[in-house]
Amino acid sequence: MYRFLLSRQWVILTLVALLLIPTMIRLGIWQMHRYELRTARNQLVSDALAARPVPVEKLTSPGHTVTTHDRYRSVTAKGHFDTADEVVVRRRTNADDEVGYHILTPFVLDDGKVLLVNRGWIPGGPSQTAFPEVPAPPKGEITVTGRLMPDETTAASGIKDLKGLPDRQIMLINSEQEARRLGATVLGGYVVQTAPEPKGGTPELLGEPGSEDAALNYAYAVQWWLFAAAVPVGWFVLARREARERAGAAAEEESAEAEPATV
Image (cartoon, rainbow, N blue to C red; front, side, top):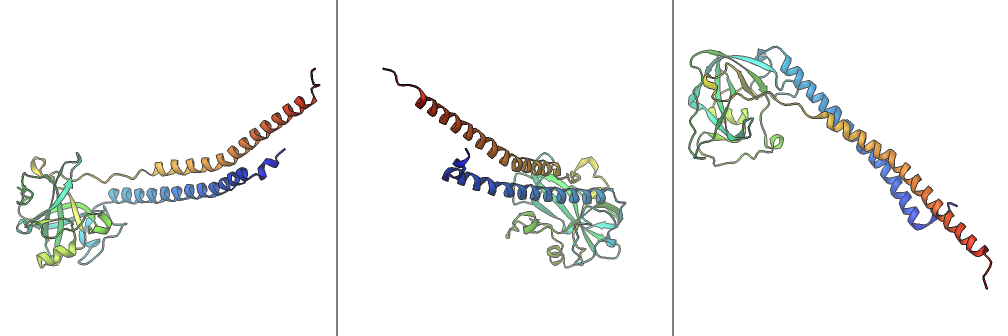
């Protein structure tokens, strides 16, 4: 009854089914791996945001690469802002997806080293070439608190480091580049300021990083495995239906042959 399974059509269908099953299982494993990675990254971010602030020089130093483990850690620094060497970072958006600038201000520590501080977002002006009007930071010696961030690179951010920009405008926040520009000893990475809050709410402080949607990858993994389980079930259902249809057709044929001829 199932000799039709040896036909070309069913052999091809069976081979496709046998190929789809391991492929879907592997796709499910891949999605589960992504789920585990995203969950781990979310936990790292959560732990970093919950950690108590520490002096910035405990986590970074000149030429240091800020690790994933230390990213978003809350740090403090005591010193003063150097607005004479302040720059703005182009094409940055706020929470409402409005395009503007981030303000990057050198913060001179008591020991003379420089910490790059991202003071927040300001809207773009009518001119893309003129230096925008930048709110002044607090004067004198203060203590700044912020989230430690690694240097930005084109590879990690996808932002091209364009050359020939207007004066005091940059595309990426990179401590090595700023050290060369300033001719100073600059700590690796930079800090996104969280305190003190600016008067009048300008510039806008940057919000906390959002968590990755790991649950979506979990759902995709389960979906792929359900598809893998459905393939043999579907193959079996199709084969049974084909067998019944062929058996029915054969029975009808035999019945027609058995009927006496009418005169």
